[in-house]
Image 1 (spheres, one colour):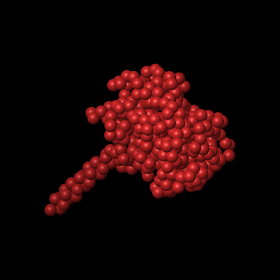
Image 2 (image 1 turned 90 degrees about the vertical axis):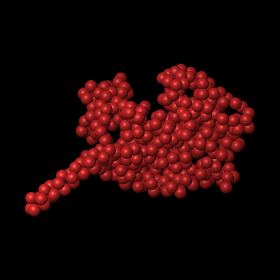
Image 3 (image 1 turned 30 degrees about the vertical axis):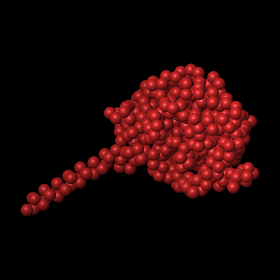
Image 4 (image 1 turned 60 degrees about the vertical axis):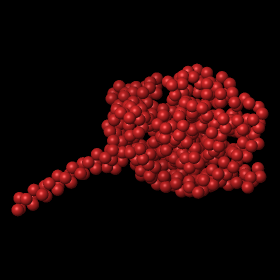
Length: 423
């Protein structure tokens, strides 16, 4: 009888052990990866050749092989084979520093890649002293019904070396388009310092003012982009506004402009840089704008040496400064909109709706909560010496200023609406 009891105890322990191992092996889900209330751990394992390539200026934007493991609590996925490269323009850095990453997963049996993902974008936030702007911006875009990325947090290790806190931004690739749109995507164009001027539709998928991120294999031309650009040269105001619905999702585009302006996205389409955005066409040639790169938003003023200084981009103007450049012409469709009576009215109403949405979703409180989530990681990252601890004080100053900016922007919107007779 005693032997039976001992055997039963051993069996229970074995089952418990197996169960515990199974729990530990539970893979992550898409929701885990873009969970803003947690910090995901991402471990890159890169061979020597890949490390060398990513530390060489001429090749650091070229994809190289490696593996990645994703972990969150007891959940783990990987190691998974990937190709990875570094990303950025003014923020581009070598691997030994603090670079941003782009990941490509191999296609799985379903064609979707890994955990429903084909790609991942991991931003180091080197141009965002608050570490919260992308989170706040994408939260507001999504709340307004503008197709926009989900975000999460990640702490990245490369061959065991801690790279610190990153924001994990959902990449606007083909799987993103499938999740966000009910119709079929024809093309996804990347706007990087490009605007809708005659001649901007030249080149193939990898050349010209607009590169094609998706759709070239099936539709190897830019006829839809040519049609959109041609439309911007239509002069009759009434025909222009009515016909705008044929080439764009007009209401959605106007909301896109309104959110960009509320958050002060001077590095986006409707700002003076006309940069950091995607335009997506369906098979009928109707375009949607997709936001990107909103790190220098909410009044971020990296030109100023004074921490906490604010740069205010005007919300209703043909031209605007940006922190480094004075008086530049803004995005063509945005300018045409605010100079068309009907479109301007809808834009101002959309600004009013954005301001109200920022209040109703308590955007400032969401940002404050996100600050608490990432604080332990930041404190660990910057506690090495007095200089980096001083930078953490600057981070806190910018976080508080970001929350203040939202409240102040709502006052500015109210004044702008009053000036234009909008109740």
